[in-house]
Image 1: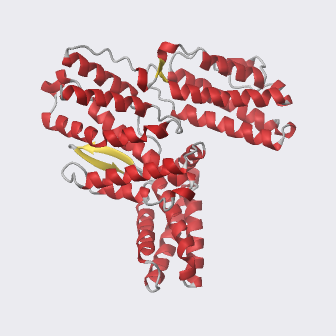
Image 2 (image 1 turned 90 degrees about the vertical axis):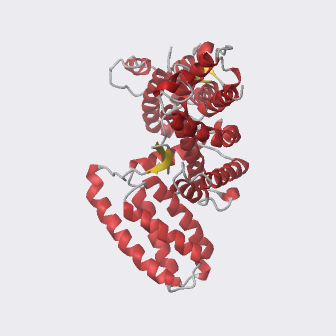
Image 3 (image 1 turned 60 degrees about the horizontal axis):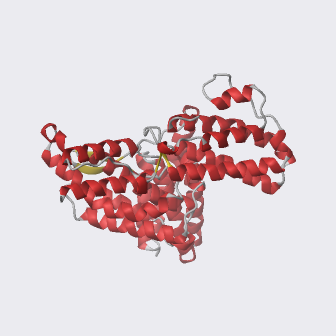
Length: 426
């Protein structure tokens, strides 16, 4: 039995290691359709396992349901093919998980999937949580109420995730944090050389674009892409900006001189190859591939991002100007929700989720009324102001979280903070 999300995550990760190699090795006995189904299902299990929170002592119902559905797909395909009767790949005999011990005993793919099904089915109901049945233990004592809310909020809000944007609150001001784009040590020299060449090449293209009649906004966005490249920071944001510029290139290509159009095409392809050398971009792309968002989902996320940026622009004392500017940048990478790529759409949703993670995580420490003597009342007011500012927007995004692995926490956080706000007006 997996008693905690951490244990379930470890079991799933080991299962993916065993099944992935086994499926690839035995793929000759599978039909093309079965190979695609199995490969996709195994990849989705890996993505979900990475997103499962390791902090709370409980599981989110939507994630448990999602995992059950994926494992059911694996079970069906294995039952229909000879691969199900083949032994799984043996993992090191560490004994860390039930999966690793099973692989040492020569179990088949079907037997391993059956074990996973049992793990998920055996999660006790009292450890499965959803927003609609939160048991907050509320009493008439406001101090007890807010203490319980503080505890629950602290337990369910995860760490920020791999995304184009990371947020922080410094001295009561919401800011953007930047991370260096670190490549593998073996590739470091090649990456530096490629970046230097791209910077030089991009500068030449900028000068040629300035002398042409190209669209001014396209020129501005391309210059922004080059500046981000020069900083050697935020590799995922660079990748998203490149995707947005590529869409604009296609839109305005007929209006550009052939030479510039050709250089732009080559340059953006080279930037795409550059970001592909970074592990963070690879993981982000893998996570995006596992998410299916509809046109209406993307339109909703884009509208919410625009509203949040506008609201933050009216809060200059507590929100850095870079925050709404960056949110708009990610938002505008989606020109048309009807044809939006998975990576650009996921980038927007994940950016909003990271914003909610930081704000709700920050407010949690100020939700306990009994802590007022040890914290700044000004900071508490700012924290509550942040939470109140985003509460409605986070609530509007809850309808999307079921489609995004690891986002089930948001529904509970919205309800918890809503109850806390209600105590303030009581």
